[in-house]
Figure (tube, rainbow, N blue to C red):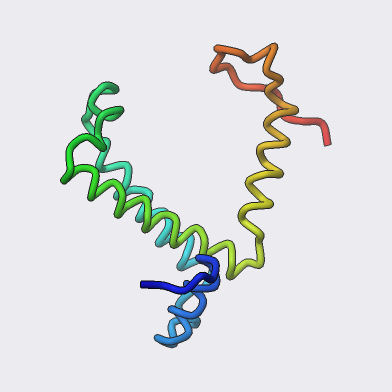
Length: 119
C-alpha cells in the first residue's frame, strides 16, 4: 500500500510525481487546510454533545469523519513541510508553552484563559 517513509516524505513524492509543487504554495495549502477543517466541522454541526461523542459508533459517520481527519492531516503536514517546519517539534514546543501558561494546579478543571507569557 505505501512505503515506510514519513507522511511528509510520501506527500512530497506524491506532489512531485504529479508536478503539483507549483500549486502547493503556503497560501494555497493554508486555504485547502481551512476548507478541509470546515468539512470536518460540518460532520459535527447540529449534533448534541452526546451524539458528537458517539459519532464513531455509526459506520457511515465514522468513515466520513476518518476521511476528513485524513484530509486535515494531509494538508497540515504538507503545509508544515513546504514551510520547513518540523510539525512534531512545533507541537511539542506549543505544549511546553501551554504547560507554562496553564499550570496543572491553578487550571485543573477550569476553562478560563491564561494571560500571555512574558517573552
